[in-house]
Length: 453
Image (cartoon, rainbow, N blue to C red; front, top):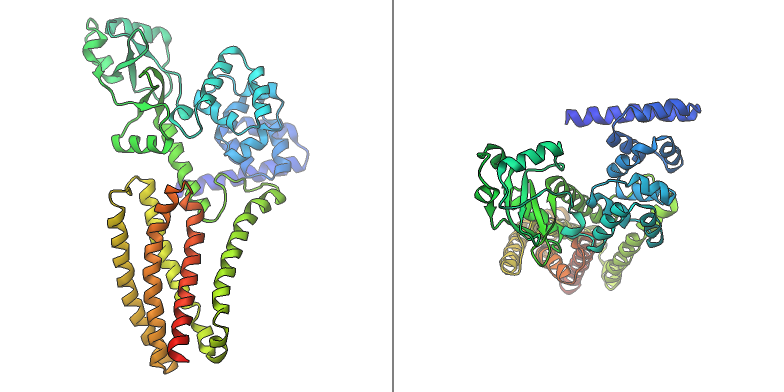
């Protein structure tokens, strides 16, 4: 916590200093400041700067560091900057970038611009980019890195160590080397620790681990993250349908997936896109937010229409208007608790068709018990407050009905939405709130009309 506070203070200080220098036209001074801080901090400064100054800051960054800074930027900010760049300059910035990062950069650009950038690349970078883009977004192939070291099983350890010394460097985050046959099919792996400690005269075949666990090139990235978590991998080989080695995925890629999933869930709960630019133009931000505000208005009107059905009841018993918000509110909170837990369980792979019935039964029981507890409490409060035991009974019944409905909706909605290929984090809370509002209002006012009039 203290470290985060210090980092925030540092960035704020740097941002204030750079903004002051920009305001005073000290562009040479700003350029020197930008060159004295790491690319990750430059990216954070760009993300913390309004669009007008951001464009100017980008021009002051040395072109040799453009690629490093782009890798650190959030998607929305990065895409905005890249779309303003000349294709030739962008191709230079993407030169020698890891394959997975290269694919992610190009994926956010318009098709016409992607073609222009590819034409500006050298043949090697173009081939890597085209291969990465050929895999679907969100698959193992899209996030893998093709920079691997492969061995032949008959070669001795001494030869391999001599080769590595001549090479002088290993691909980043390398913890094991891959053994392939003459058809490039993966047949085993050799951990670096085993290679270093093995006798020089023995062959790779004698120390390799056979039948290694692999990742299929078309596997969804969320499933990749679950495999890494389950097996505590640092890296894993990626193979195609013919079991040929096509690349590897490392833990840093998986950490990015987990972070993006968490940000997506958090932003989706508010109806926003993950990695949305804080300083995006007003019209662009308004357009994005208006969609879900419109959906929310529609659902609110549905609840109001239910209340309108009981206008006569409300006009005769004004006290019902005072108490009418309690039942929907309690149901909404209870339902969202269940919804959040189920979405989290689905993200971790805990919820499946085999245990969903048990989960529904559990949440039904929780809703029933919560209904009893809070029905008794609210009935007692209302009966004493308004000196009307029948009114207490009415709100207690409505509370029970809505608590059970909230629990069931909270667990059934995300399961059904996932089957329909709808993101439950994005739309689940909106639909759930509508259900608890409509059921709560109808149960309360309907029961009041029946028993009190």
